Length: 119
Image (tube, rainbow, N blue to C red; front, side):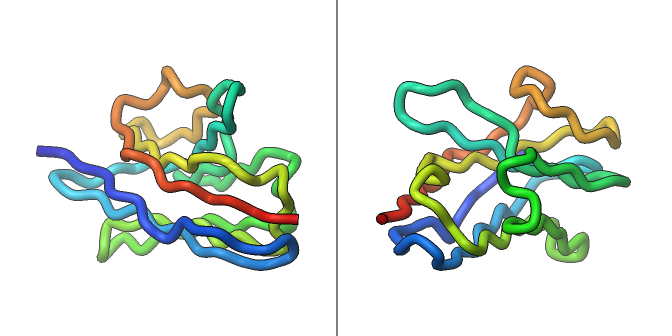
């Protein structure tokens, strides 16, 4: 059974940092990504890692995605957090070796972890 389990969310003040983790079990994936969804908004791409790394413009220079293949885990280091980063963050996985930026491209999802940034 394939599972993606996120952890690391929480409440932080603006300017602070959080590190999200997503542990995959059941199989390995060549592509892993982070999406987020704020209340009343669509789910949006944040960062992805395969043979390349991609970020959405609003997080470039502040967020860093990385992976530990031995642990089958992907991380999202989030620095200089802003109130507009507040959302539920989801881990997604695919096995085609390309970073897709649209949610329907991913067949595997975690349950999400809440990130709240206070001003």
